[in-house]
Structures are given as C-alpha cells and as structure tokens.
Amino acid sequence: MIKTFDVAAIRKDFPIFETGIAYLDSANTSQRPRQVTGAMLEYFEKFNSNIHRAAYRIAEEATVRYEATREKVRELINASSTKEVIYTRGTTEGINLVAYSWGRKHVKQGDLIVLTIIDHHSNIVPWQILAAEKGATIEYVDIDERGELRQDQFRKLLERSPKLVAFGQVSNALGTINPATEMVAAAKTAGATVLVDGAQGAPHQGVDVRALGCDFYAFSGHKMLGPTGAGILYGRRELLEAMDPFMSGGDMIKTVRVEGTTYHDLPWKFEAGTQAIAEVIGLGAAVDYLTALGMDAVRAHEREITEYAFEALSDIEGLTLYGPPPSRRAGVISFSIEGIHPHDLATIADRDQVCLRAGHHCAMPLMTRLGVAATARASFYVYTQKDEVDRLVGSIKEAQRIFA
Amino acid sequence: MSSTAADDQFYREYILDHYKNPRNFGRLENPDISHEEDNPLCGDVIGMDFRVKDGVIEDIRFHGRGCAISQASASLLTERLKGLRLEDAKKIGKADVLGELGIDISPARIKCALLSLKVLKVGAYGLAGNDEDEE
Ligand SMILES: Cc1ncc(COP(=O)(O)O)c(C=O)c1O
Image (cartoon, chains in turn yellow, green):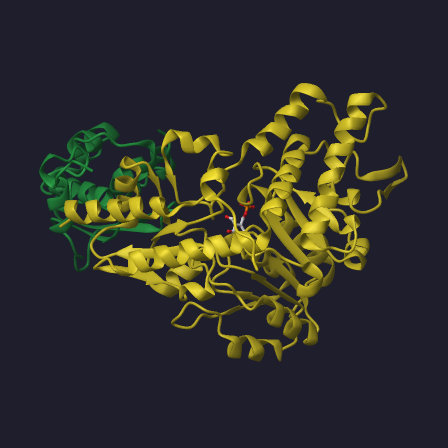
C-alpha cells in the first residue's frame, strides 16, 4: 500500500500559505518549507564560512553539511556514486555543461541531434548553439493530437544513428509523462548518448537514473522544495571522467603551475569557484523532506489533485485543455478559454490571490505547434489542496463574467 | 469576486469594447510602412500598416493577437493616429498611451500596454525599440 500524507499538516511547514494565496505555479518554482529555509539560516547564523578551504571548525562543519547533500541526492536518484552527482545552479546550467564539455568534444559536422517539440528552451537552445558551431543537424520529435511524443517518428529518427538524444522526462508545458525508460533504451541501442531533462521529473515522478539508463540527467532544486541557485547534474562516471571542465578557476584544480594545471577529481572538477553553499545545504533539507514523504506518496497526491482539477476544468464551457488525460500526465494542466487571453485570466486570478502562470512556458516551439501564442497553466505539488483548484475555477468564472 | 463588468477598475467597459470590437483592425494593401513587434514574455504580436500622404497618416490598420490590454491599447492608439501629422505622432509617448488606457497598469502588464507604441516608434520612426523596455 502506498503511504499517504496529510496535506493540511504539510501546509503548516510552508509559512507562505499564511498570506492566503492559492499557489498554482509549482512547475515554475515550488514553495519552500521551514525545514529548508531553517537549514540555510542555520548555516548563515552558526557556521557561515567557505568550504574545502579552511581548517577551522565552522568551515569543517560547512563542508560536511555541503557534501552531505551529495549523498542524499545520490540516494534519491540512485546514482552509483557521489562522484556522479555534480552541483550546478539548476537544469539550465547542467544542460549547458554537457553541451559545452561533452558536446564540443564529441559532436561533429553532419552529426544528428534529436530533440523534441515539447522540450523547454533550456533543452533546445544550447543544442542549437552547438549544432550551429559544429555543423550538426537537429531533428525534433513531434507530438500527436493528445500531446504525446510520436514514438513512430522517434524510432525512425533513431535509424539515422543520432549522436545525441535529449528530451524531458515530463513536459513542463503540457504535463506529458514521456515513456522515458523505453525511449532511453531505444536511443542507447541506436548508439546515442542520452540526456534527460529531469526538471519536472525529479520533483514529481522521482527517478532512478540507473534504471532509466541515461547518460546525463539534469534537474533544479528550486522546483522540488529547495532554494533557487542549486541544482544537480548526474552523469555516468566514465563520461564525466573523459570530459573537460566547464568553468575553470579555483577549487576545481589539483595543482596549478605556470606551465599547466591538473584538474581535481570528480565531482569537484566541475565545481569551480565558491559554490552556492547555503543553497546546496537547503537542497539537502528539501531532499530529506521529500524522502520522508516518499516519492510514491508525492505522486499519488499529485495525481489525485490533477484528476480533480482536470474534471473541474473540463466542466467549464469554452475551456480547452491541452495534453494527455490525467492518468498520463504529471501535475500540470495547460488550458485556454475562448475569448479570454491567458494574461487577462492571470490578472483576474491574481486579484483573488490565485497564482496562475500565463505565457509560453519557455516552450515556444510547442506553442507554435499547438497554434497558440500562450496558454494558462495550473501546476500542483505536495502542498496543493482541492480548495485552491476551486478558487481557480471561481476566478475563471469571474473572468468569463467580465469578458462576457 | 464582487466586481461586475460595469464597475471593474481594470477591465473597464471601454477597454473590453476595444478588445472585442477593435478599431482599425486588419491589413492595408501596399502600406507605406508596415512593422511588427512581439512581446517576448508571452509571444503576443502586434503589427501596424500605415498609409502616409503629405506627412499625414491617412490610413492605419493593426493586426495581431494579444490580451485585452495590448489589443485595447493598440486600438486606441490607431484611433489617435489616424489623420495625425507624422510630426505630431512622433510626440506620442508612454504617458499618453497609459493615460488613454486610464487604468492602473502593474509592472507585469506594462509591456502589454506599450507594445503598440513600440510598433509605432520602431516601425514608423526607426527609433531604438529598446527604449520602451525601460520603465
Ligand atoms: C522541463 C524544464 N526544463 C528546464 C527548466 C529550466 O530550469 P531552471 O530554470 O531551473 O534552470 C525548466 C524550468 O523552467 C523546466 O520546466
């Protein structure tokens, strides 16, 4: 039996809800519980110092706490070693790191890179830059009318032996849960290196990177109860070992002589300069929080809210829902309302203290594919309760009244 | 949730009217000037076509898609521009456009309100559009 949790009790850990907001934008960034801000505050107030560099007690404490997050994350994603867990600022930096350090070495003229039309800009633009620099080609896997990736087309593209395949585990714009394990397996069989954008996967679906079988997996702490400025890049060790550094400077070196430098071991080779210490410690507390809830329970809760919201929104006249049915999507619902621009809806919702995203969700190729400029998007997390969905429905009806 | 359309402080009757029945909406054939700008935040686009004769804006149309604020603001602006001398059109600024809208625009929506002015400035005058980005 899946364990469940008490949402009312969880909400007490999130002081922001005392402001009365209905927060329906967790796919953008999540809220952070006291446990996370508390861990960061403790660092600032009790052992604020730089890591890896000093021999005094508080610096040792800071280093231990900072490094402890690595083991927590390793366990969360089931990596084989903490050497495979690299701290970044977030998904964007993780993907750029791979595009730079792996891509520039391995992608050559005429190579094929396979992406998808539902990818986030951060999993498109770095590859476009790389492809332009190297003379490589990019192909995008299209979606079907349900907003799911066209697997037939994907398989066809794999026959052309792409050098790299990169896609999101879960779409931030449609909520589509991609069949990531099968896609990775097929891409690996075709000889490709595979990067999975886990920005919406790690927080909501959870991940076992070894079972998934990908080469790289990037995600952001701020979408999983952690602070901004701390994220993770997982990479298979042998690939990371063979890669050159991304940023260089202090901390990522073993020895520096005027005639040359030897790099530090993994994972520090990729962590140049003074790091986001408080943020990484905060991320560790976020992982503890999620682990205590249990990712299965997180998923179950989100699914319940998503089904509830899907039904409530389906009942509204003139509302178009984008993407797959609730059983095949994460806690994200994109929609539009006839005659009302998403921005206007968001403004009206905001007056009811309902935080709703309106825009292209950093997925302009997808918006173009859907033939819309923007959608409204509601997204959910561990603390979301049905009453927040009800308030959204109220705001939508209010907007329809104003625009009638 | 107490407001009604009539007394709404933001979505005033005339704004909704301009949104639903935009004035000078469409395209001109063989315009003397035609320019489009988009709002990178939301992907909305507004374009304007101008027919200019003897220094006077004889005819004008706008097209594109967007929220009530950007559409109403564009519609209002075309009404003001039609028949105006280019020299005088040049003097139209942010304050005029916001004043004409007559509502309190939050920082999040200011770009929507000023998108059509940007089209006017960049398109008709070749001024740097970036000026309009600053608040
Ligand atoms: C699917 C996906 N990929 C990448 C990102 C980028 O994450 P970040 O802005 O934290 O680097 C996001 C977040 O907006 C996302 O939803």
